[in-house]
Length: 332
Image (cartoon, rainbow, N blue to C red; front, side, top):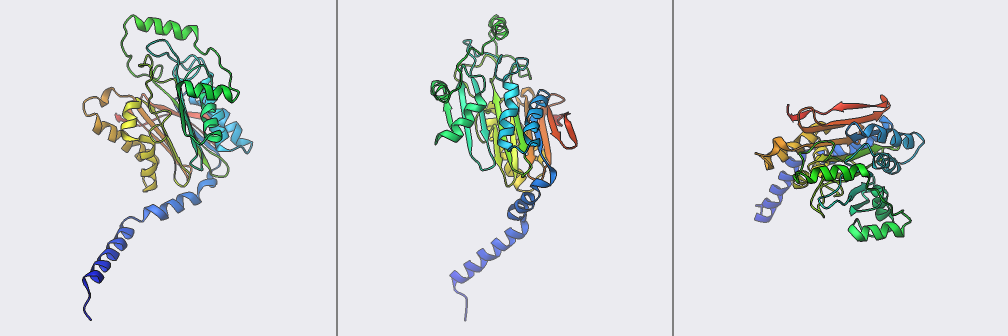
């Protein structure tokens, strides 16, 4: 009996699917393989920039006592939010064009739950407000006055977190009124990823944003996808640098998806930088961008744009006191 047109089409589709599964075995099998390795490597913390060392230590203290990766990332970045020597995050962060200190942060756990806050004033620890949004509301993100009112309703203290040093820097900037070039002092974030003893991964990201930004400007840091993304089957990634460029490629989500397909963490970070280069063919040399990634099997990676400018902090069993590593870069 001859085959009908429908039968032939069905066989053709079946053959295509079979070939696709042979050609791309990484998706389901690779996820299962990565997931099965999670807890073999012990607790691990990775964060952006050398100032992440202290945050890592606080996060690792939580993990060493059997705490969750979610608690670890929150408590880790709270150290940086309260550190006045870090002028791109939290207390003593840089002001916007009109002299206001507005903070952005997000947090994401191993279940895919997340919370975010943007343009928040008067609260020293926006990361904890982001977690409260995640756990106590049906929303993901609150901004501005609404975020402040929610924070106060949850018992957060409204206080003056604008320092005399921040005002001095702002007044000096007003003399030129020009957006400063991106450097770790005026344009950077702490993003922190942690794996606990159960192999569960969480991430946090917090910043005061671009120095002297237009009022209301929000970068990538509080955005789930560009600034931070966690998929507990695969791993996590977070970003630092020029938020607009990172948003355009949805950088952290991109890296996690590349790792899902089988790419090594460093190469996935490199590919995200490559996408930014492609979108900014003439401007990329002036962009400061960096990514870090933590895979479910415990492997880490990082990549930056400009030579020698992006470093990250790694703390694990092999580096219990933490280690600062200069990431490879596109413009070597």
